[in-house]
Image 1 (cartoon, rainbow, N blue to C red):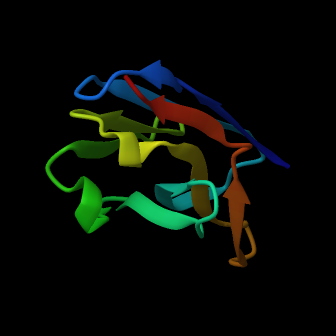
Image 2 (image 1 turned 180 degrees about the vertical axis):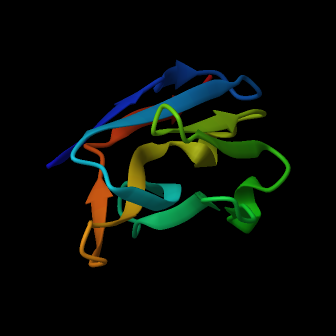
Length: 120
């Protein structure tokens, strides 16, 4: 079993910053891609940013230049630095880990979600 603990969400004003963290613990063999998704009310869940192990980061066009995803492999933790936040960034943010078991079988793990609200 793998557990994810997300933190760092909250209510901020437009133009401000937040930093999300997602720490994984438990039976971890290999974490391949770590990422963040978000889901706004009435909308589908969308990829915000992802970072492969030793690879190139990927961002949604709407957050390029404002958000930065990073990971600390020693801590099994992924971060999302969100700058210049806009009201349209308001959503529940979910951490996602694409992992591999000891026997080579891939699987996904999701966080419980954390609210980010951008409002004046």
